[in-house]
Image (cartoon, rainbow, N blue to C red):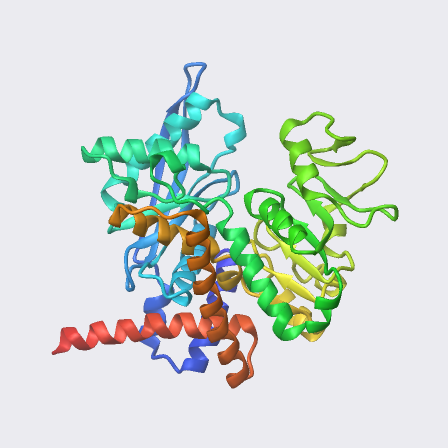
Length: 430
């Protein structure tokens, strides 16, 4: 069992003890319904045939169809995918969505594939799992290193196999094939909504200043969140991607995430912006630092938005932030969390913090089913209400039971799943 999966299981065990769940219910909610592990053959541009290991784990459909992303990641493994599938179950339950949890992936470095190879691999994935997915069965979405273009190929392949255009089979689609407005910024937007509520409720003094922020990860989630927070008056002090990190130096008040994004996207000089490694900074201004230094930077808010396990027992005692907003899945290990809590650092758990993506995925799926499409402002307003409602319930449980926000979130999510399991069991016995 992977460390990541063990950590997720520990969070479930703690909540289960609080809820006094029966052992059979606990075993049910910890065990995936189905694990698909398979090989996708791919004819490379040079004529050679290469095989790629792929996965789809369907954790639970007790509340509705399976829901979860597909990642293309060279380090993907079955333990990671099982952990992520479970997290999706708890996210959808916590937010009150009519979905269960799933996750998929291909063990591949997609940067080494040509566009044709990437398309064929994506279509091959759909062909392999076609009989196990669908609008009312399992609805995949983008994740790490997948994007609307890849989802477009997947929708097209599914529709060909089905014999009919079926947009509700996937979410995260482009607007022109019935995707939802607001989906691109949804995860970041939801994280910003929750962060602002946390500051209002727990750190009101931060409202009198420009809270300082360090963000690890400058992809869709980290990049959009940096822009949203800057517009809201936060000071972005450090940013990173998988290769490099930068911080504002003594001459700068803060980084400009839009300028960084533009420079990174174009990889050319823009407004005195230049690239250092693969993250860009202002010429004569920002300093190159390591990802480790970014995590340990003295800021009000630290946002890990990359991959799991970035804060662990080896560096937890050097974390200086007041608040950690988990925009990645599982960025803090259980051992590290104990250290951080002893230091008085408030952790906003992943199953709440980054749930904005699956909320708007649900809204996209709903629009597809109803064949009615809404403006972005309406989509994000609905998402905001759902995120705040979930947060208020988590806060209430945390106060009443005197537990952390993570424990409260798991208690709420697991209680809903366990209740539905017991109801279905009772109906079968009648």
